Amino acid sequence: MVLAAALSACTVIPHAPPPPGYPAGPAPRPAPTPTPTTPPAAGSAVSLGVQPGPAPQGLAFAGARPAAALRSFIESCKVLVTRTDQSGLTRPADWKPACDAAASWPPARAAEFFASQFESARIGDGRTYVTGYYEPEIAGTRAKQPGFAVPVYAMPPDLVRGWPFETPFDQRAGQPPLGRYDAGGKFLPYYDRAQIEDGALAGKGLEIGWAADPVELFFLQIQGSGRLIGPDGTVVRIGYAGQNGLPYTGIGQVMRDRGLIGTGPGQYPGSMQGIMAYLREHPDDGKALMRMNQSWVFFRELTGDGPIGALGVPVRGQVSVAADPAFVPLGAPVWLVTDREETSGLWVAQDTGGAIKGANRFDSFWGAGPTARTIAGGMSARGDALLLLPKGTLARLASAGSGTTAARK
Image (cartoon, rainbow, N blue to C red):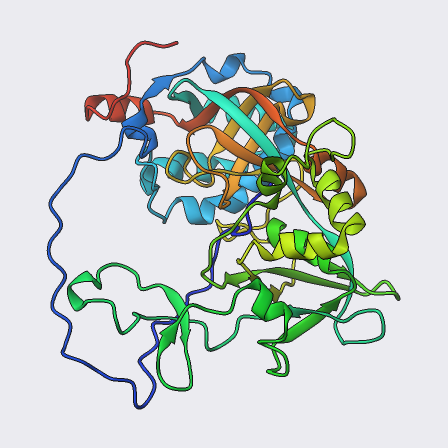
């Protein structure tokens, strides 16, 4: 699957001024005020359509890990009550009653909490597709040593946002692209995967660890966080810090287009395990294939409990899912019923992903270790999804004419 590399970037990339000697040019003119346009039909949950779902009291919360979901919901509350919901479904104040109740709610009665504090909603047709991701554990050390020679880089200070000199000033609206200034002051795209692997960042003191296997590091970058496990059992936990600004290419799709994935002779399974087998059995072609993905992920060392998701709180195995924040309020509980028993149940949306786009698209997190790796690598589930929203949300949306139907489905 592919949680795409870009698991949420929490790092702010600075807008750097041009270096000395860079032609300044005339002062940029103010960007023209854009003409209001009608948002796309599927641009957000509200624009896609929101229907009331079944009463939460009828959902089988008791057998769906409710205590673990309550813990994660409580951790999300500190953000839920302050942040703007991109989906347009909720306001910070909507979450306060449920968050206040959750703070002292007994874990043993967690199923009652979700049944009593929320109402369910279906976005669009509610049909869901669920994949999986995990926290990889790969062989790695903090210091370079024999057998550990693949660098794990921190964010480079020369990765900044700026405008190429040739970009007309009246087109310099919105967020500038990521890139770097060369010695002559020209703004360029940042180094791509091939350049970084060939040593573009070597010797700059950016190494926060060293991996043993470039294939394992490649997939750790796709997952967005992981653990480096040393020969002596030392663990260094690393998390997403940023990305080089170049496009992500899913090599699984490239392999499929080339006829390398399938069930025929000489073909490989489309799972993560099948793709890794091809890369190892064809090292030269595999290296070239990985370099087609120009995106490179930079890391930071993490401390504390669990990898941190896009919401800024820990993501937890068999509890957290990544979602598209245009369709799901991050921090909201999610109820899934799918054709894979593992993904059916109660989850909390606490993360995002570059490949996790659209309504009812989720990526389930499975934690760390070999079991998590196996489940996440082969996860593909389809079914139905409901969002659990604070009571009164649907009535408010309906009264505001926000595309919410009044009839309970």
